[in-house]
Length: 339
View 1: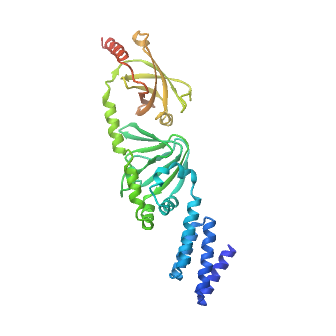
View 2: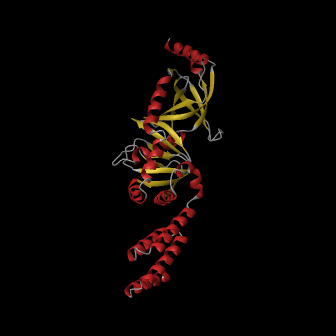
View 3: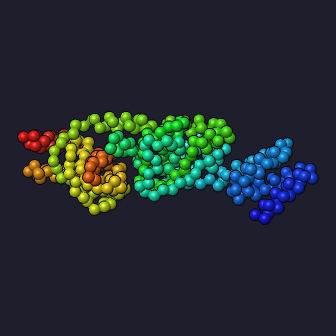
């Protein structure tokens, strides 16, 4: 701190004595020193001061600018660049530096709500580590749209608009590391590199939009006829390797189709949120109907409905759909219920 103060005083002294060349040389030295120490904001401020003092010191202005950009490029998180290779290949070195140092890094634990549907939020999120779940709430039903991981972007549906409300909610499925860009910051960065926003917008436009995800989910829910009949289900949550991740629990079957089923369980909001997007192993029995029929399936939890008295309706899509013979047998059981 003492050296900084001494150098600043010396620069002012040079200026008072009209020793412009000496002030320029000392400023250039300080800029290089701060750049090498990765004090980039300070280096930029000093370079602006250099330009203000002597705009004709072209050699020093260009050299210090190149030095700052080189040091910035060398200091960028190499793991981040490797994850986002496809995107950064479309940017110049200057655009890469401007974007990376314009973002903020965030880390969140599992089951952390990053934003809620209906909030006003203009931020773009780059996932470097971990997974997040995007879901859409319709009345009291949470519908899983997609699970994202490293190399995925989210928040783009509202990022490029002013006063836009989030159309989905996002919750972490595991601990995550994110790089976050604020819309207000992008407006400032775009003054430095005019093509950055356009390239970022083009990249986001190439991804599946939230509107497309919503449309696909609506279509999927109408494809298969659901049969309503009583049954018991033994459910066990699985980890990413499809190994048991928790103790099995009993649930009540509500309806079933070739593509999936819905069951009722008593749990808490936090526990139900953990299920969303997870694979579960299920064993269905129909003892109540006097049948020895048994169905075993693995499926993914795609939606949740909250019900009174801490009960939740869990919607599961099978990883392997039921064959027509099994559906015929279930229809026969349905007919026995109707009688």
